[in-house]
Length: 329
Image (cartoon, rainbow, N blue to C red; front, top):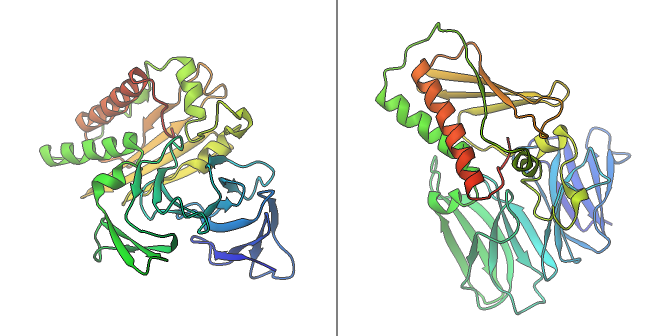
């Protein structure tokens, strides 16, 4: 018997079911046998949730005091782990940025709050929703208004109340990849201050600079909270690192090619567009930084490209000075 069943949010044919500590991935077009088996936990799984943007990624929460993140195509090793002090009742992705909300097992009355985490740094929660007098039985998301970037968290508790919590953009930003957020903000400010015309100038190749090899090594494990305690939990390949990237920014598309060690980032704003190729050398991240190159049909002028380069470089250097890991590439 299955204790949990969840439809994939990006692939209409896939669903996942939990059976004690195992997960089975199903394709409804071939219902006679599971597509994949994941031995996720040694204890009972209380919750399943699919990633909102990546059809291969899912999170499992368990009686064993942990939330584990999986790429079901590589079922033998989890991508990341969130270790808690108590059993985890539910763990669900936020509909924005790189967030996750957890609720502890209802029988444990000592903890009634919901915790908001950034999947980019699982060492400590970024926010706690405190207010219920008894255990939280269920929670779901809803947009505050149609087209709004504000979201609301609706919670139901055994204390006989239903609460609605507002998650404004400032709170959402705590879960965001601020490298990307700063980049997009810089592009928007520059677009407003300049009259953008199509440029026929040669496409420059931009290399990130000022990043010591040891910090690039940190970058490889940026989405792993338990890297120092469990080195095997780090992404071992570029494909695994790609699978951890979670970009939820309107009008931005990322195409990843792990075989050719590259990705293309496309962005639209107003009547302009940007296409940026990021290439990863074979020795990345050991003494080998990725390169950035604008390609056709990029329509922004050289001035804006220089602005983007400065944002990438300055943000990276700022992270290094604060001794922080760089999220995603």
